[in-house]
Image: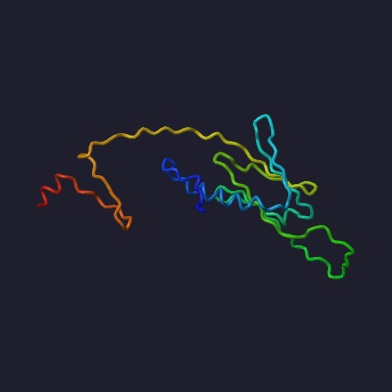
Length: 166
């Protein structure tokens, strides 16, 4: 069975990175720990991601933006007391990595930790639309570059050059 490539349309140029991002996203949605909420905060539609990180302190958490990906890492540094005996142990003391893909125009504004809830605040920044006019050159006035098999740029000979070299 062949795989359907959503960005295989010849009119969608340069979307390979978006396709890779969607593959990473589909893998990361299978992570269930820690649980989280994503809220929209009116009036200016800011976003807030809240993660339940009970047992983690500020020194146990790391928040970073890597490219277009928000990454939250948690690692508890405390070692359990070897003398402690449990009848039942239901509190997970494990490390985690949770990542969220950020769209263009989404910036991290800050984070806070309160009562076992880590809140990360995101802002939407309206991108400025840039319109660029492309001038059309006559064939004789501008040398055209073509790619050879080694992907090096080489100038293409014009008809005038070919006639003078012979």
